[in-house]
Length: 191
Image (cartoon, rainbow, N blue to C red; front, side, top):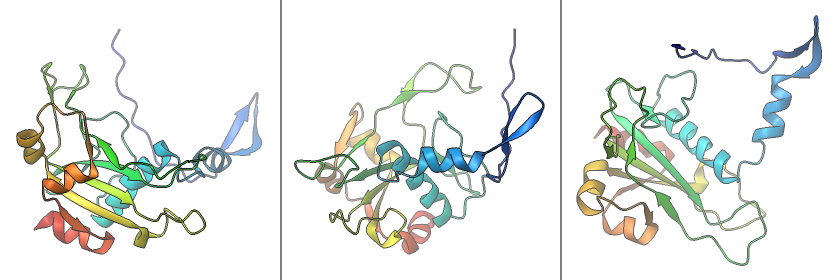
C-alpha cells in the first residue's frame, strides 16, 4: 500500500464540526482556543516562536509542517531550526527555569526523498528564542519586546558541539551568536 501525503489547506477557524447529516455549533476556533491559549506551555510556546520567526522573516508558508527536518525555509532556500525557552513557566515553580535548547542531530524521516540513514543537523542556521520576562504578572509571549533572539550558523554547532544533544544559554553565548530583537531578526539573517 502506498499512501501519499495529505496536503493540508489553511483553515479560517469558522469551520464547524459535523455529526450525522449536519453541522454542530462547535467551531474549529473553539478547539484552537481550548488547545492553544496557554502560550507559556512549552509545546505551544515553541510553535509560537516558529510563527514569530516566520513573521519576522516574511516567510510565506501557509501551514506549519510537523516533524520536518527543519522548521522554516526562506525564499532564498535558507533552512532554519527554531528553538525556544523561557525563565517563567505556566506551572508552579520554585525557581526560574534554566535556559537550554535541544540541538541533537537527527535522522530524516525514512520516507523523505533525501533520507540516507545518517543523523545530522539539517538546517543552515538555528534561531534560539528566549522569552526573557521574569515577572509572572506581566509576562506575555505576544509582546515581542519580551523576546530576544540568538542566531547561530549550524556549521558552528557542528564544529564546536558535534554530538551534543542540548545547549545551555551560557554555552551558547560562548559560541558568539548574533543577538537581536524582533525588528532586527531579518537583517541579521540576511546579512
